[in-house]
Image (cartoon, rainbow, N blue to C red; front, top):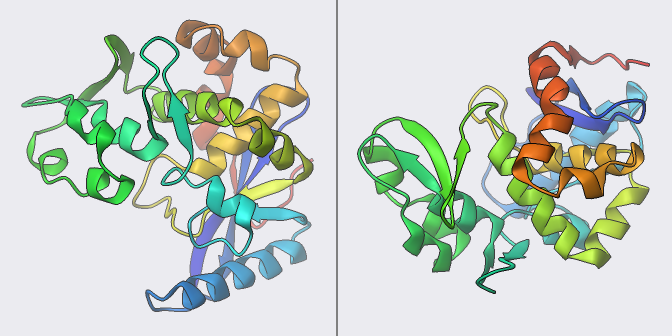
Length: 230
């Protein structure tokens, strides 16, 4: 057995509801095994009222879910017109006690950027720096969400298609071991759209943080276990 969250966008305020689901885990590294686990997760989620879910990861059975993986989704900087994946941009923006940002990771493939040994040997993470702009590492998912949602908006076809889903999962995201999650970022994007504040949120990191501050403050308290909240 394993536990993974389902992320649901809130429509009455900016935020994301998380519900941890117990489901049968299919061990193994093969994509087919991961997809069996995804199917198991979604079946169990349906028993708790969560339907029309999209798995967002490179293991997704849906092409849209694969395209939305941070390993594949790309962002282009407005000023410098440079393009790289969300994952590479995120890893290359980390600033540690003893090094960083390692901006050369921007141009590496996502997997190589994530596995760069310096990310584990440079001490504690102190902030993010993306093209000269500093971003705090608290709230913990702020910079990742900001980066991912900006990339999603740049990909208009993907950002339109994702609006038709009611919830999102990421089989690779283990909340006991990881912090940032692409499925959470998509749900937060959907909430910003539903509340009519997406354009305002993307004016600047400061505006984004102002509109999402309540969500981040309540994030840890909104996680439920196999319980649909209304």
